[in-house]
Amino acid sequence: MSSIKNMSLAEEGKKKIAWAESRMPVLMKIQADFQKTLPFKGIRIGACLHVTKETAVLMKTLKTGGAAVALCGSNPLSTQDDVAAALAAQGIEVFASHGIDNEGYYRNLNAVLDTKPGITMDDGADLITEIHSKRKELLGVVKGGTEETTTGVIRFRAMQKEGKLKFPVIAVNDARCKNMFDNYYGTGQSALDGIIRSTNILLAGKTLVVAGYGHCGSGVAAMAKGMGAHVIVTEVDPVKALAAYYDGHGVMSMDDASALGDVFVTVTGCKAVIVERHLRAMRDGAIISNAGHFDVEIDVKRLKEIASARTLKAGLDEFVIDGKRIYLLGEGRLVNLACAEGHPSEVMDQSFSLQALAAKYINENKLEAGVHRIPKDVDDMVAAMKLEALRVKIDALTPEQERYLSSWNEGT
Image (tube, rainbow, N blue to C red; front, side):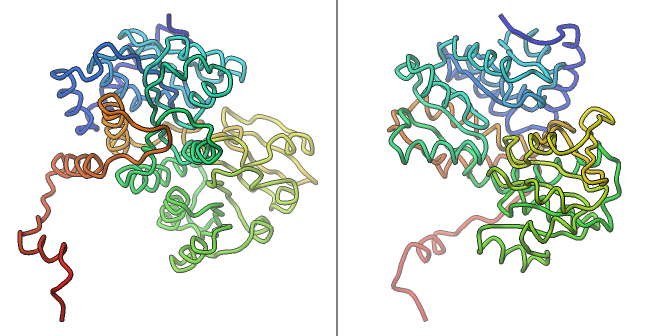
């Protein structure tokens, strides 16, 4: 039995899902194949993902493939209630509502686990972490899982290092078709979308500080630069910092950047990136936001303790510290989902095609416990399907070129 906010929103949600389907040709092609082959017949799949129209297309694809699907939200502010209603109306168990508190979040997560899934899908590792810590009776039930985001993969690699990960997890995030497009273009555009929707500021001429220069942070920086912002990057990795420098961005510590920025975006996957000393050093009117998975990158708890606050509108809170105004977006949660609609459907087409095929791979193969990469041929196949949908043709190696690339005895 689903637990959602408002079933009357289902028709509106169906329209949004139909739009996403029209922009996700690869996943729809996979869905058509699944309808014929039923790769998940008799399988239960439990998912903890952002409940968006794009996720809805993935859930429908899994259901079309024969799976019994249960879905909960992976962030309290990312659920689109109309999409949740539409999925529930189409026979998918959904446990999600926008703005849910922490207790409700874990109640919904455990409702998914109560269905005893054979395959899990995570965005942030909460399902599998809960299984390993509090729902150990499911360790013998789950055949394997998938992970969508960098933060979740970091958690699973830590579990693997300690010998705590008891079943296989495919790191979908590590696939090239995911991190080169979803992370870079998707986060780059949707994070700025969330900032602009919340504030309607002009980015041109602003100094925008990006904390973290991985796939996501570099995407945010590139797109902000393209919109006329002066970009400063903060990093702890010297190689990534050097890359940011050669890409034409200013590079410095957050201690130095905090007094210069007009807009801040944390995209590190780590905690305590913006703390009290940074907040006190910021200019009057500074805007702070987070595009990392968890709400730990900005010390929101301390901000609330040292400042007076008022809510200007949903997703935009004003804090006054030492007479200076600082604006927090989306409560410090994922700004692209808390304040906008998340990544564009076109880029999620690749990521969720990989999710569907990764689940199929888990179901058809016996994998060792641990973190696995998605097979290269699956990654390449999704890219080829996307190119075909875009009507883009590329070259193919000739037999002579293949022999040359596989040999060592032909040189100068």
